[in-house]
Length: 235
Image (cartoon, rainbow, N blue to C red; front, top):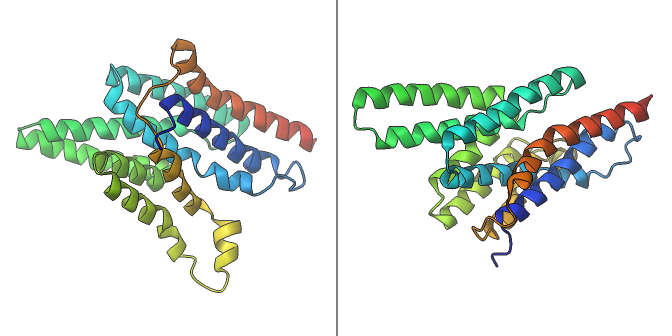
């Protein structure tokens, strides 16, 4: 059933994201009273955002303005990160994602072999930066490539995404597998994001200038509020 519009998926993603940050930053301040399933659900946020960034890449009126908005917010978040001593900057990951897709599209359409080689080198460098120096790391790069390259092959996309999501479990095999998978490193739970993603109906949903910027500004504002509350409670 195709129940969710772009707007609905974004609402779901920011709720999951907020839950994840509440667990990350407030659990200690609240004497570990925040349920761990807040963290579990939080792992669904990034895949939904990366799926929608690929969709946005195809539907945006101006890719250059799209990139400018993302990197402008990324610069703002660098300031927030410095002031509040936090490492979060999803805009940097999303901005690099759109740059990567733009480079791939250019390389695919170019007929100049030298130009293609240069773009491939730049693309490889960008992959490295996005994979090792942004919040989403290699998970973000992998998700973007899966959602982009297999966009028209849903079955292959689903299978690739499931395998990619569960790869981390292989490293946990051992006597402490349950604790490792459910208490220490539950990034693999992002696999469940494929359910709402498959329910996307391709429609924009509620859309206006306020809504567009609301989603951009929610990220820094909710982090500032959550981290500030955690500091106040800890006093």
